[in-house]
Length: 306
Length: 210
Image 1 (cartoon, helix red, strand yellow):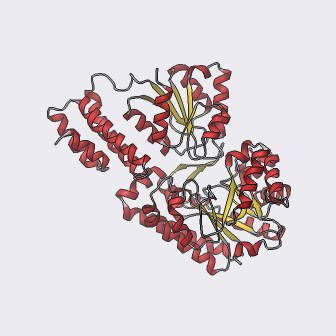
Image 2 (cartoon, one colour):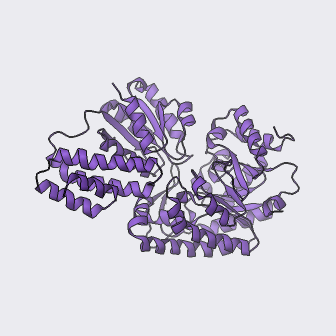
Image 3 (tube, rainbow over the protein chains, first blue to last red):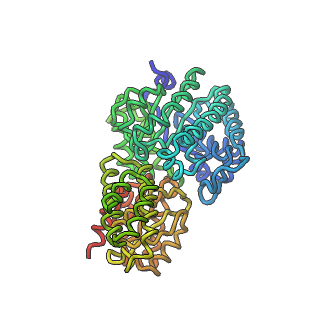
C-alpha cells in the first residue's frame, strides 16, 4: 500500500482537499492575507478556522508563494495581493520561522495530516532572478542559472530539514517548471535534479511528498514519475501516471460553480483509479463561495461513485 | 548580408547577429520597411509558429522578442509612417495585483509584429486605468492578462466597469494568462480567450476584421 493510501486508510471514500491557502482562510475570517501571513498565531488560527469549517482531510500550510524568495532578499508588496516588488537585495525578511512555528501550533491542535508548501528550487531561483530575465538566461547564461538554482536548492534543503524535524509532510510547488513555460529538455536540464534531491531528502525522513506543477505537464510525466514523489497534483488528472494523483475540480469550477458541475467533476475524479485525493487543480481563488467548497467535499464523501 | 539572414538570426535567437545585420542592412541599400516586413515580422511569425508547434517555449520567445526590439529600435527612426496604425489599436495590460507580465509582453511583440499599434499599460494596472485607456485611446481591443487565481477575478470587475461607463459596446475584450480559460472568459462576458500568444493574435485578428 502506498503512503497516500496508508495515510487515509480509515476513510470510506477517497480523501478530499480543495487546495486552500491562507488567502482564502483570511477571506473567511474577514481579514487580509497581509495580516495573517506575518504572524504564526494568526496564520495558524486562519488555517485552523477554514479546516474546521470545511472539514477536509489535509491541512496545508500555504501562506503565499514568496516565503523563501523574501527570506533570500526579494521585497514583497502585500496589497492587494502579495507580489515581488524587487529582485534580491542583501538581506531578506525571513518568514520561514513563522511557517515552522505555524506547523508546530497546528500539530498540537489539528488531528489531520499536515503538509507545508515549499517552492521547487527552479521556481524559487526564477523569483530571485526576475522570471523574464531568468527565462532568457536559461538559454544564454546557463552557468549563472545553474549557480542560482544550486543556491536556491541549498536554502530549501536547510529549510526543509527544519520542517522535517517536526514530522510534517511537504507539498512542493514548482509552477515555473511547467511544460506550458519551458521545454521538457529544459525541465530535465534545470528543474529535475534539484527536485530529485529535495524529494530524496523528504523520503529519507519517512515523510510524504506531493508535487504540484500547473498547466501542461503531459510532456514531462515520465520525468515526474521518476522523481519518486508520493502524489502529483496536476491540472489534468486524466493523464496516465505511475504516481498517484490529486486533482479533478477545475479552478473555474470551484469559483463559479454551479453545484451540478462541481458534482460532475468530483464524481469523474472518483472514478479515476490513480486519483487518490479529490482536490482542486490549483489553489482555490480567494473569494470562492464557501458553499462551492462544501459541495465539493460533500460529493467526495458521499457513498456513491457516480 | 541579406534580409533573409536577418529573419534567420531572429529565428536562431542571436541578438548580436540581429544587431550587426540590421546596422549593416541600413548602411546598405535595404529600406527600413523591407527590413521590418521581410526580416523582423517574417522572423517573429516563424517564431510564433514554432511556439504554436511546441518546438519553442517561453524562454525562446522572450529572446526572439529581444531580437525584434533590438532591430525595431534601429529602424524606427527611418520608417516613413509608423507601422501598425492600419490594423488598429490594442490596449493591453496585466490586471491589478499581478506582476507576471511575460505572457503579456509576448502577446505585445506578436501584435506589433503583425501590424497592430499596441498601447501597453504594463503590469499591476488598476482597473480604472483600463477604463480610462478605453475611453481615451478608443482601441479596437482591450487585452487583459492575469496569471494568478487571485488576480483573474479583477477581469470581471473591469468588464463590469466598462458596462457602467457605457464603453463595453465600444471595445472587444479578450483575456489570457495561466489562470484563465475559455470558460472563464465566457463566464465574465469577455469576447475571447487567447490560450497563448499565437492564439491571442488570431483571435484579435478575427475580432478586428472590418
